[in-house]
Length: 265
Image (spheres, rainbow, N blue to C red):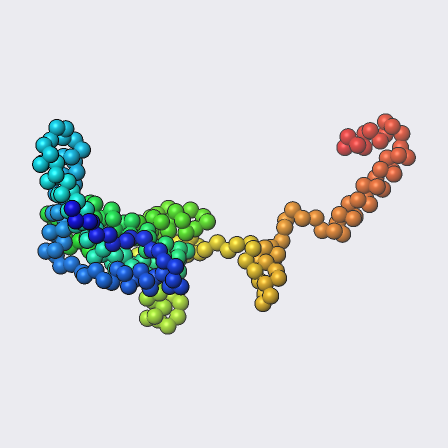
């Protein structure tokens, strides 16, 4: 049997630039036209059918079993080919989500999981181009991963998508206007109220660690600038201690009954 070609959907390597190596690797696979996508999808479907028959049909002949195993392996080859030819699509989409809390390599890895799901779910009989169908699955995988992994504070997936849309519009308006757009200007583009724009912008801010170093030498931290509302001012602490001592001295000069009444108060 011919071995199934493997197009890696994971990024590995010991070089200084694993992204460059990965792009070089996936760039060797030719892009597909619509007819080639349909042919691969048909082979994948046949392979899945063969796998089902092998798993659920007892007592089949050796000859039929051999044929079914060949079809199943051919389906795996087709799946690997369809995956490999679309890995560049994942990279292209992942670039749009950089700088929002996840590393570029992690975005690619998550997008590749979405691509695998798209290959498994693709229905070639509907006439859509595979890349159009896969784009939705890739984006969903990336945005879900961002919601789950990229933030200390968990944000619902639908809100992550709104944040991303706001960021895209904000970047475009920054280029068009030459300045940061106001909430009112953004609200008109996004069809939401200015108050909602401000709320979404708050969600989109990354939390800052209290241990973030400050100053040129980094000898202090952001948390040092935040006052502790529970902390006692040293002068107040000394004054409170002296007051306690004076009160105890006063109580000692009273009768037991009088001191007891004051302590109860």
